[in-house]
Length: 154
Image (cartoon, rainbow, N blue to C red; front, side, top):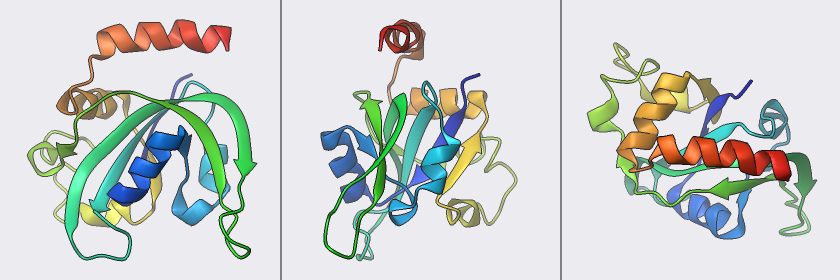
């Protein structure tokens, strides 16, 4: 059964992942990657532009599907070896979260909606996934059918 996830990552780190075709969550921890399976969908929400910066982004910034169940580790520095998963990202446009707050199940009627994102990674309902994807200008009618057949041949 396909599941739908939100990952919380600064926009500039999301861009690195999209360019490299990988997902990295919660500062490189393995556990959130293990919860996802091949065929699951991941949407990144970026609260800020840069991890160390103060400039807000507050937008959904990337969307993709996990292409396998492999988790691997890379050495960035001697002290930082994050875990990653391979993701096939779709072309999309960033979508500001504010117009969606009253439409999404996980933010509707939540005055402190930002607290949920502090988890770094959480599952959402398919309807919320579809609403966010639409706001990101992703046509899921074409995409989901094609992805189902592509996953079968990988």
